[in-house]
Image 1: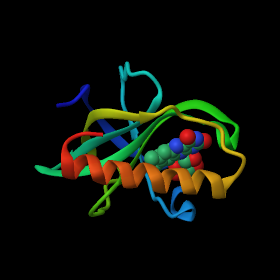
Image 2: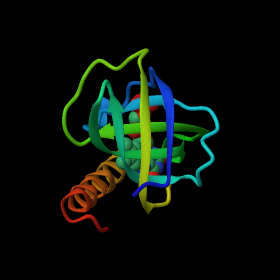
Image 3: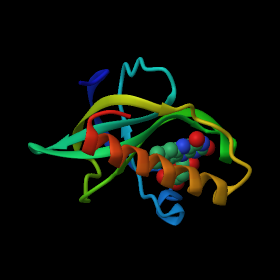
Length: 125
Ligand SMILES: Cc1cc2nc3c(=O)[nH]c(=O)nc-3n(C[C@H](O)[C@H](O)[C@H](O)COP(=O)(O)O)c2cc1C
């Protein structure tokens, strides 16, 4: 069950993700006609499918409005830079929000990850 499936190239982000404790892959996708939000989903690279959480939209906490697709893998890692990957979007967890600071954002992403793991175990949100 997924909302949409697209391929895109993994590009470099601003590099803050690792500092937050939630490293992300930025994926450049064309025609990503999806309402902004935080979703669960799957990233496929070379026949391997990874469960993930993703942020599609701006990073209002950092004053950035330009939409980007950022993927945080729940398990596994790899050097995907410059590679073409497939992104499958699953259910939406919440809206993208502006947090008072990095600590609040980190707490929320930890909760997103907890809910995502629950989804991958039970099949429902
Ligand atoms: C699951 C998830 C949820 C996120 N939710 C928000 C959000 O609600 N608001 C926000 O400003 N940024 C959100 N972000 C984006 C982070 O701000 C971003 O990953 C961080 O700034 C690192 O960016 P960089 O890799 O370009 O340095 C989210 C990221 C992830 C992976």
